[in-house]
Image (cartoon, rainbow, N blue to C red; front, top):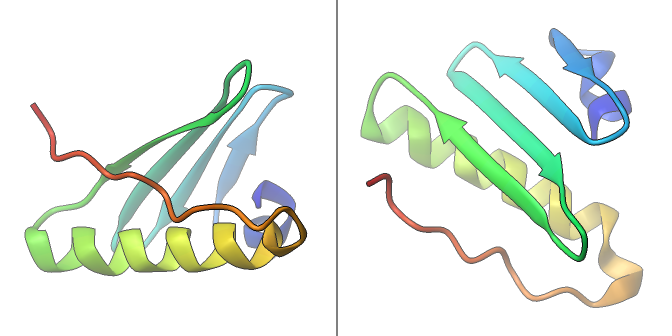
Amino acid sequence: MAKHFGHKIPVTHDDRQAVLTFEIGQARIEAREASLHLALEAPDAAALERLRAVIESHLMRFAHREEPAPPAWTPPA
């Protein structure tokens, strides 16, 4: 995803994590042992929902061969 979005928006990444900076907010993606950890930040609930939809749709599209379940999102603490 970092390479894909890096052609359109500011992205920083290394082997384990990426930070995608959209106009509507920021997505942090961290590769863990057997999963991805996603953290989204946006200025309001509407922007957060749009950001979540963008990230989720791209994840599902890129992983389609693995037949993944949709991400399990939890609200901020």
